[in-house]
Amino acid sequence: MGLGRSLLLAAAASDRLRRMANGSRVVRRATRAFMPGETVEAALDAGRRLIEMDGRGLLFTHLGEALTTLGEAQRVRDHYLDLLDRLRAAGVPGEISVKPTQLGLDQSPQRCAELAAELADRAHVVGSVPWLDMEDSSCVDRTLDLYESLKVDYPQTGLALQAYLRRTPTDLERLAPLGPVVRLVKGAYSEPPEVAFPRKADTDRAFREVALRMMELASKGRRGEGPPSRAVLGTHDLLLVGRIQAEGRARGLPPDALEVHMLFGIRANQQARLRSEGQAVSTLISYGQDWYRWYMRRLAERPANVWFVARSIFG
Ligand SMILES: Cc1cc2nc3c(=O)[nH]c(=O)nc-3n(C[C@H](O)[C@H](O)[C@H](O)COP(=O)(O)OP(=O)(O)OC[C@H]3O[C@@H](n4cnc5c(N)ncnc54)[C@H](O)[C@@H]3O)c2cc1C
Image (tube, rainbow, N blue to C red; front, side, top):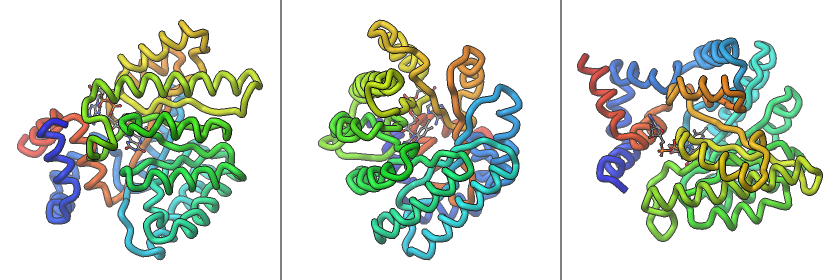
């Protein structure tokens, strides 16, 4: 892992820096590159504009993590229930993406499962889909258990898996009989080398292999030879997406078995280009006041972004 990335991920964990960043109007303004605003209204407006532009899919995430009480988790549940109702009322088709720790995974896995089931139920009623994000490696076993329990009644539920984790191919096989609805991402946390590949090349190779297996499962599902599943690539690495599409074609897997999810504001022109080529693309829109850790991970993904922020602060 590069020094810039390690420093930014370490800064993401600092409460002192978080307080300083939150208090700075200029830093808050700089976050606008990756989030349209802190409120639901700002997120919905941005989503509406993207739909009007090219009819792409949308996902919404209310930022926040590391809760300390179940009361806070219930407030997060209430927020998403309200968001789902507002999406329906506004006629904005959108899915939601939730961090299990925001629903109390660390405090009570059982209560977290109840709250997640309430969200999945409301999502089902309003025609939406709930996704579970994957957080640091200490959460993976509990998140997989949570996912399996949700899949029983809400099979459309999706889950993020991280290609940098050595265990991910095994985890995907564990989920294969359930018809996994998986968004494969590279992985955004600081992990030790025995848990995650330290080299980007190894993560990219693992990403390709896991993605092809996901495509295989999705096309089997379409042919009725297995349970329905979805293969989603959550990445801005379009070279890698192109390679996976080509390799999939060579193996006889239909290219439309793949979907791409990308983050609001990142490679926005490429998102529009992919969409204009007929690729199923969704944009994940994050919003909320608790943006500091999430924002620092975005900077760590591309330390060159720090210059972008510095430019916007110092003019
Ligand atoms: C929809 C979605 C959901 C995600 N959910 C999770 C999750 O649940 N758990 C998790 O651990 N991680 C999640 N991530 C983050 C992911 O793990 C990566 O950290 C992130 O996507 C950056 O990696 P990349 O795949 O884009 O590839 P990279 O190889 O890092 O980047 C490829 C290219 O994309 C561009 N790019 C990438 N990131 C940025 C950026 N921040 N700013 C500007 N340009 C950039 C650059 O041009 C770069 O060369 C998610 C990502 C997406 C898109």
